[in-house]
Amino acid sequence: MFRPFLAARPLQASKLAVVAGVLVFGTLGFVRVVPGQQFTALLAVPFAGFALAVVVLGETIVAAARAVGADGPVTQRIAARPIYAVVRAVETVAALVAVGGIVGTVAMVPDGPMAGPGAIGLLFIVGGFGLLALVASLVRTVTEWYSLSDTGR
Image (cartoon, rainbow, N blue to C red):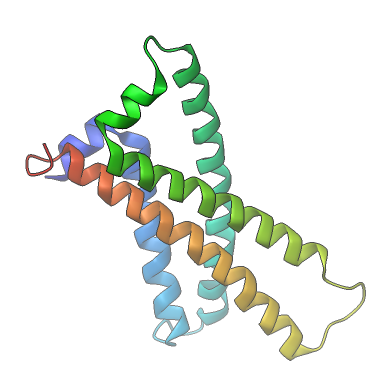
């Protein structure tokens, strides 16, 4: 069931595996199941979310360039798969918000040492933006997996 998806969309399959792994590791760290790795698990979510959001934005730029150079109007391609187009647009907006939110939050950090509660608050803020990017990407990859499966055709 996963092999045809891996063969047809290797980047999406890789994103699905990474997102699932990071979300499981982050959740286990948040509920303190991973011994001695709680902080690492909490840091994995914003870092992986930021990296994934940058990849999604790059992927969107490449897809937009291909759509402009392709034969036929773009509206035809959107009309052929409207749900997927909406999911992809939502993923792109979520990636933009995540990148802007993480960069903006880090840019607002004052110079000098910060009190512990303030640092933890910043961790949860950037973690939320990372989680936004991860969940949006998870929804898109599952949608694409479903559309390539036998039931989605």
